[in-house]
Length: 291
Image 1: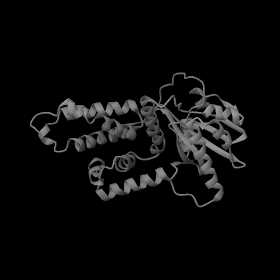
Image 2: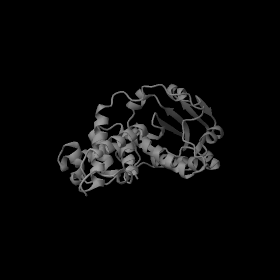
Image 3: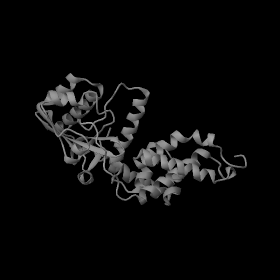
Image 4: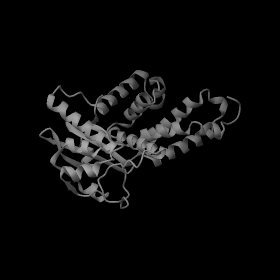
């Protein structure tokens, strides 16, 4: 590097990457922007001659900032939510414009955070940096203050908790998983007939008190009504194991985390229960479905 300071233009060339790292570490778009700004402040106080690899330096810097934020975080989402339009807590696909695609990517990252939130800060950092951004264990070790091997074990432990253990081969469970995947695909595609085909005729959607407070209708009855409610929605949902069963994890924004817990009858989805209460979510055993 030339003597002096790194330019703002050089930093801006890395902003999108830094924001992506912070979003997936923190699960909060607002906090991610704060972390990016703090990274710029630290960079502006560092001589260019002390930086041999700007991209690596920035990734390490923002990782340390995020780790400090995770460790100091206390109670999340204490402020009351503003009233939102009534409807099921799902993400609507309004045409897949470039803006919609960015929003969908953000919502997937936020949904993943619902699972990552179960991890200790160092585990979460090791998993996100290595598995999502392919940062070598040796570099992550410098951030968490452990050996490369200990960091590898951190990421491995986090990976097992995020992905869960494969369920024993079971024909019924295999059919249920296919129903979940078919439901999600049909909802995203807005395929009403495909949604009907996986729902029990007496299917019901129910929301807990917190989901209702956030704007969800309390109950929807009948396959036709449930299919209509989910048609063209759930763009940012992730399929998951929930307490040994199946469900979907959704984060419409950084302040709302919802798990849709699914029940089955006669090889159809018979109930979709929206759980948004933070205490209830904290008690759920959630892991993503393995590929």
